[in-house]
Length: 383
Image (cartoon, rainbow, N blue to C red; front, side, top):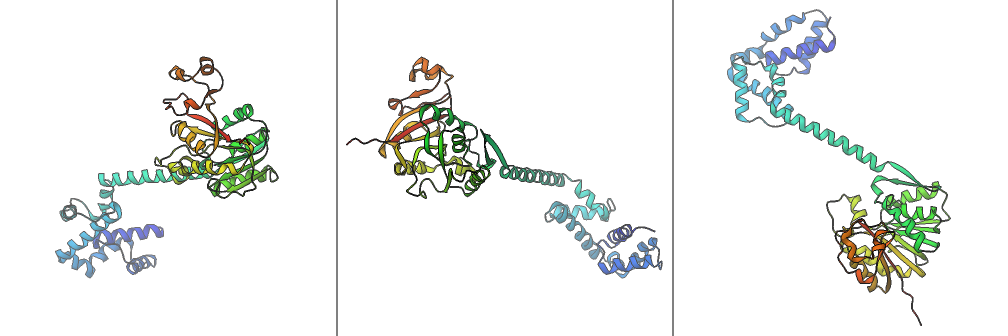
């Protein structure tokens, strides 16, 4: 005895080949039960269907037969090629079936072997792979990772990493060399706080303030604070620039690896928050308000990108807001002689490469290293 699935498949095929349609539920169950009860044999089904009134109407009426075949062909177009049949294709398949060049039961395979279907299948495969890649990327960007600075473990996700984990660590030797130990440092546009937490871990400040506009960055910073038991040393603020910072906050040094570009270049929403500062609005507002939060000799140290800005853009903001421009410099040593006209030979070859106010308005391009520091401070007034 055939299995239930095999028997149903046989009856279905008989309906398709003889009546040119799928079996209705009642008819399928009726013939199935007849065979199970041994009232008829499986082999009797084709004969029974050919003796039915439906088959006689089909075979005796060419119009009805054509319509039944067209219905089957149309179904293949819709279910396999995902479109309505074109008139030429519909009639070609109809004539081939009527001439017995192909059987109606071969239609599914014929459609699936067509070039059109192969293109669709390939496109679906590509889309499926793209979806898998997208899901994988989403998992990766939301996966919580860690990086360790001294004994401090910093938590982060890939989507929040704007470079502070790599080139942002240039702050450590610079702050060590140029600034005394700070009572309190603030990192604005902190993301996960790579720069701020590493400064704290290296003993360059006693306490830390972290500021970011992205709630996800704030949450991951809080996780780092909690896991490292830093609640009494680190404060976090959700704020667009300094707009939501209480007036009692005071910092000896404000550091930032801020958005490096003025214009959007096709970024995602997350990338936009990290990379783009439209019309330098955030920079302008920070330089305008930062004096209210700096201690008497407080400084601002930003890390900018020569591909997105030139130093004179920020020097103008600094001077407009009654701040003192100290210097602008690259931390990495130069590897090109093309810039020798700007620097003393020994400065160019070794160590910190600094240039002063007279150079700030020059257009330095190309540069041997993309990132440059711009250091400003609260202006000291003499009475």
